[in-house]
Length: 339
View 1 (cartoon, rainbow, N blue to C red):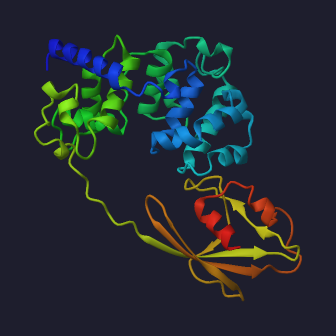
View 2: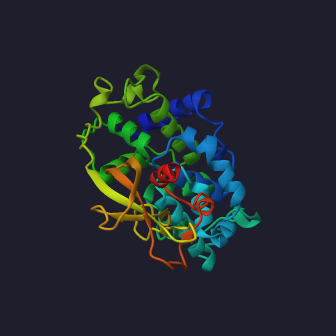
View 3: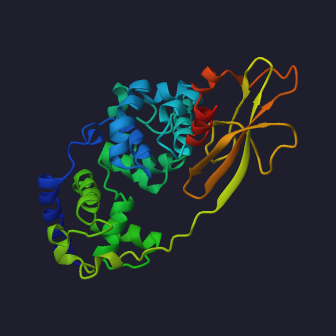
């Protein structure tokens, strides 16, 4: 693939984007790195429609700047994230905000969301500083650099991976191979429009199933167009294991229930009840059962109500009304409905 053919591809891609691109997405109409950062984190493993309809604007309204986000309680951040899933994204977003405002990592970053957000950081230090933050990998760092600061770097989310795999007929491409191809095709003069166009081509044309190859701006150069669904090769899906638990609602003499925030990476910061691998030995009342599907396992749990020992008070005891205001996962919401 020579320079001339790549330049011709750029022209076709930009024409397609001008006619068909999703230019109405709000994060494509802002120069605020903070708003772009929030959108990129929300869009990880979540569909555009979900982010746009229920989360993006409410989150920015509640935490309009990086400084506001850093100063917020983690409970409030998780509550604003509730229902979006993959809650580690929210805790990392919060931790990153605190890390940035505690020391100025690079010119312009600390003041994201404020008037000084237009300051240009040092291009050489921007991506390394972003990669040092929790929850930011290479793709997110490149996205912020390309979209907020027009830096000539390639973005490679799931849709772009598929486009690249098909253009170069790569069945099982490695990460370094994909990044090399992404940088090879990059339009360094127009990194913003180029990267947005590549994502849109993957989402709208080079779809996972039934791709519209005749409409694709990469059609003339695509090596995989005769059998596009062969690239990349589908990974065999494993049936997620089932984890069976007894979840105990401890209730004290005041009618309050015991709940604590999780400390593990999984659902970090969200409140949960007592979980056991076997039924509790003491007398309890069964309230029902719940089933919750996660990405890597299925939870099946018996929900039990148990009276706590007399005088069991202090921290982490909540009324039902208070529990409903705490950040919890979908499993706990089902439990509260049973209660």
